[in-house]
Amino acid sequence: MSKSGQAVLEAIFSRRSVRQYTDEAVGKDDVQTILEAGRWAPSGLNNQPWRFAVVRDAKVKDEIAKQTRYREIIRNAPVIIAVFIDNRDSYDRTKDCQGIGACLQNMWLATHALGLGGVWLGEILKNKERVGEILETPGTYELMAVLAIGHPKHGQQKSDRKSLSALVFKEL
Image 1 (cartoon, rainbow, N blue to C red):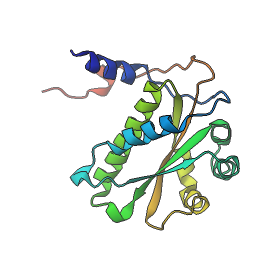
Image 2 (cartoon, rainbow, N blue to C red; image 1 turned 180 degrees about the horizontal axis):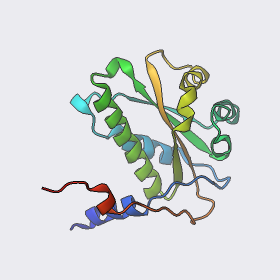
Image 3 (cartoon, helix red, strand yellow; image 1 turned 30 degrees about the vertical axis):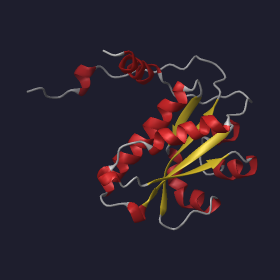
Image 4 (tube, one colour; image 1 turned 135 degrees about the vertical axis):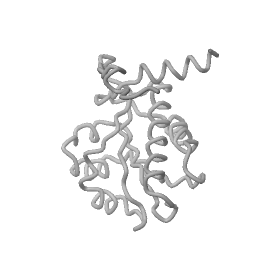
């Protein structure tokens, strides 16, 4: 296996959700790199239906934070990225949602590669219309997730996974 292949696998296996951040700002170049990683995700027919809102403003973050029970994560993250699907560019809902998932995974891995931490917040989707109003999005945009990003406060994140034997139900 190539060194770059090993690095990709290492990033996949070592990445963890980070919910606590230092007060250190996240640089504009780092955010740009994270967005670029999302932009390069695969999508059906290369329609690239994702759209991003980058939020650093404390007042706006506070309004968005009110839309989820995980409000302290959003309030304490130096930057959040709201990821939307533009339904005008959608051609197949399932494939487009899979593309958004790939976009989010790319962004998460880029966050990790930059030495930053992040968490993918989905519970906020119960108030996705309100988040769209706060961010004044076009009517065709639908919130898919919010990524909270910052410098990890500590490196103690742990995670368990089910065994492969519990997940693979058939091998022919």
